[in-house]
Amino acid sequence: MEIFRKTLSIMSKKIEIDIIILSYAQSIELKEVTDNCIKSLLCSEDPTKVKFNIIVVESERAMGSYQYEYTTTIYPDVEFGYNLYMNKGIDISSSPYVCICNNDLIFYEGWATNIVNACEKFKLDSASPACGIFHPQEGFKLDGSIHFGYRVRAHIAGWCLFFKRDLLKQMGRLDENYRFWCADNDYGNTLFILKLRHGLVTSSRVDHLGSITLHAQTDYKQQDLTYGELKYWEKKWKYRLGTGWEIIS
Image (cartoon, rainbow, N blue to C red; front, side):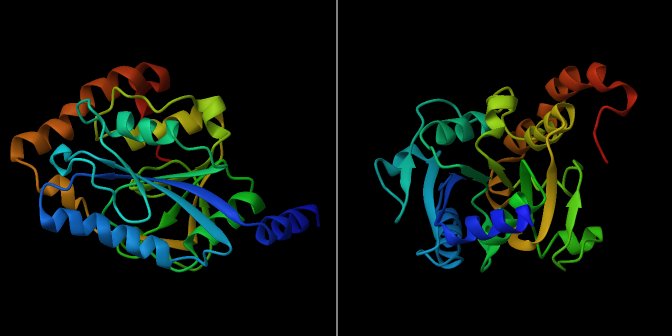
């Protein structure tokens, strides 16, 4: 009954969520990817019930002071790092809920209210919405169920991570040694070690269109940002977790 009352209370108040989106608009096509992401986000919820504070962290400095519509757009003056840029967005936000996102996403109606309600009802510290493209291939049905765990590209959808801001008091800042790959693995393992609860919320749908910006980079840069990250990841976690150092529960 107490959980029910708390859920009703949450639903009766306007939900405020900080959305941090990373973008690299090297071309008109890649800028459109970010634009479409923002448009789908704004259409996904009733603005009288949910307020999105959208922060775009843009890597293409040639855009100058351009501001994506309905956002605060910032241009870091340091070399790209996925967690570094996410931290910069988090640092200038203050809402009780935070969602860190790739730009190649399409948000569906009710994704935010459904994920907030799941976090409150099931006492989740962190959650990911389900992707209608990817998750069914992994055996997950978009049937409203909750799947608890820490497996990357399953429970942990690194392209869209939703968490309560209070989580950062325990977890600290995102590890800025990760420039791209393994940032989601590190996030999942940190949650596991700290016994913070994470779930895949299948009633909340956000489709991931598949690393569009990454695939636009040169082969060398793609290699550097992906497999080049494994050395630090292994150094940090192999001896903490032993042979089974990658959490797959």
